[in-house]
Amino acid sequence: MSTSFAECSARERIDALLDAGSFEEWLPPAERVMSPHLGQLGVPSAFDDGVAVGRGRLDGHAVFIAAQEGAFMGGGVGEVHGAKLTGWLRRALRERPEVVLLLAESGGVRLHEANAGLIGVSEVMRAVLDVRAAGIPVVVLIGGANGCFGGMGIVARCADRVVMSDVARLSMSGPEVIEASHGVEEFDARDRALVWRTTGGKHRFLTGDCDELVEDDVAAFRAAAVRSLSGASRPVTLASLEAEHALLSGRLAAAPSDADAFSVWRGLGVADPRRVPDLDVAAVHAVAGRTA
Image (cartoon, rainbow, N blue to C red):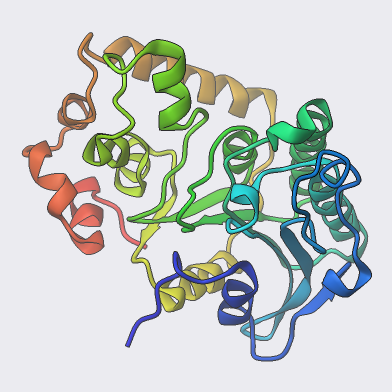
């Protein structure tokens, strides 16, 4: 019997991924390291500021792991939330775990903390790249109900590897943000089928923004995390950045003017793109010619 990754809390996901009883949390709720801003604004706070960070063992190997809690303010990043992630990543530079796992679920910067949240996200990005530069792989797993948007969407793409479920979403701007800024004619956030085929795991996998697509199942995510132990960190070099830029430029140039996901998938060689939303994960892997 499978357990939905999307329906788990942050700590339930950590417990499901790691070897039983191996998680050591730093700055747990009992220490009450929380946002100094939310209380002043009369907004409810959380004793862990919406993120759990620490270390544990995965299939017997030492790993660092962090999980954002989407049930608290959508996993938004404020000053303390960002500082906990940055400190956790900097500690990885000292202790050198075999892999760093970030279970992302966030709408991006917590608007209540504005600039403090923006600075927090930028510091997390810098720290992710520092960990990669030290040769330690950084893997982001996305499967929460709130998706991974805003600054955390950029953080995810700074990682060595991105794993998503078929119900997960990843993007820079969320559907509601696009609709608010460009109008419902440009993007109707109420059209859930449109939202998923534009930002969902299948789309990200077919376009290469996601390295591995898994079922919405905690066992599938654990298996993907174990597989990541055998991967090396990919160095960030000028050549790799130029290659990424060329890839994105080519994708933009090839996109038709009515660039719905269906037409994008057809451009990628998918023979019957309208069938993709109904395919299971194994079938999507087959369409893409890729395996886990």
